Image (cartoon, rainbow, N blue to C red):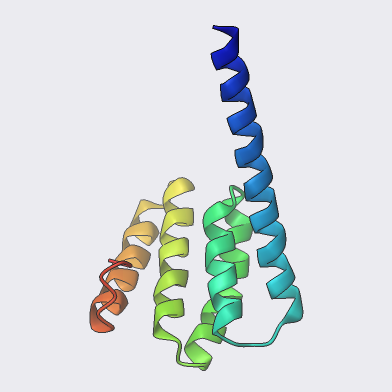
Length: 116
């Protein structure tokens, strides 16, 4: 029994460490601010890892504009997906549905069946 508890504890510790490393890597990409699709991908992945959803919305708005400016359709859809998740977690279900439908529509137009 103790063995299993130790095993569970260690797996949770490694999971948290891996997530922290991932967040740090994504933030390093954002700090370079190249204004390209890599930056948009980094913020959408980072947004999915965050739990402070009001901050997520603020940051993703900025990168949604970038994605649209550079005509990066997948990044635009990913940003809408993150928006939808954040709004849903905050209880703004109307906004969540609207954003998720926007994401689904864009994914369908670019034949991204993974995003859908």
